[in-house]
Image 1: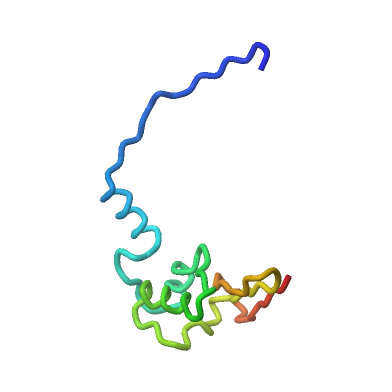
Image 2 (image 1 turned 60 degrees about the vertical axis):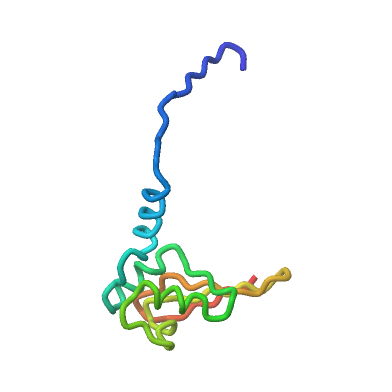
Length: 107
């Protein structure tokens, strides 16, 4: 670090626990249930839904989307990616293609 000068900002962001929890509820679509439909399913699964415990992703969808039912995981707007390798065997639900194709990835 010859000749380099680093200036760090002294600004501090202060947040309450309530603000942090409210933000996490909002971005996770948990502050209010979304209306039924493919668009809501896409929003609920935008970052993936962990399904390593059987049907955990289904429970997450039910918490986020109004009218979710046990077969909702098969909706064409979702895709399931499954890992086969190592010790853990789990899956994740994420966004699917518009053509309704199911994608399975193994590695």
